[in-house]
Image (cartoon, rainbow, N blue to C red; front, top):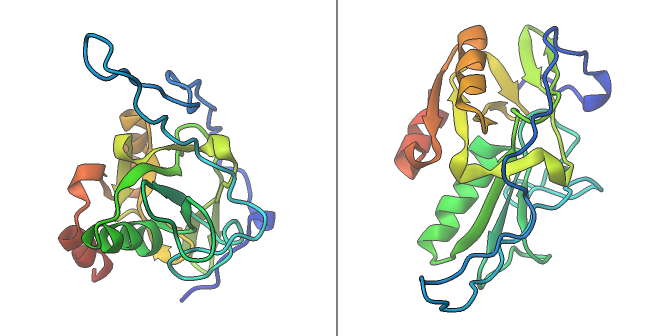
Length: 202
């Protein structure tokens, strides 16, 4: 396992990344049930800040110390061990998605899943010991709806535990990243337990 760089040592990526204005606020989303006023559904929870020494619910690593995308999952009638919702993660391929699939099999219902949105952050890349890592981001405003992301996989850019899924809310951003750094793109629905098992064994 290569030594994982910390955010303090990041150097700016040559191409400046814009912070895009989101078309839809990450604030509370209220939906009306039915056409004739069937009442309001439960509001979708907002993402939270993951700084402050929070430990990954899948592996116990401190979030924000290691490279790569972070994530969080809110559940309807369950909560992670040791704290209230959401469950939080410092990696997607070895944290968020394995946890999500495991608890889905146990009957847990996710009400919101958020991941780092690299279309809306000024991310940085760092090369160390021959490997390139992407910066980590923990602020609440750095997260976007995981189900609407396009993920770059099999690129030469790593997260905190090695190969990871790099999410972008803008599909063109994801395609450009893959062209520059290798890899392909997949959607949230493409990521199944079987797909993930194969990905982690490559």
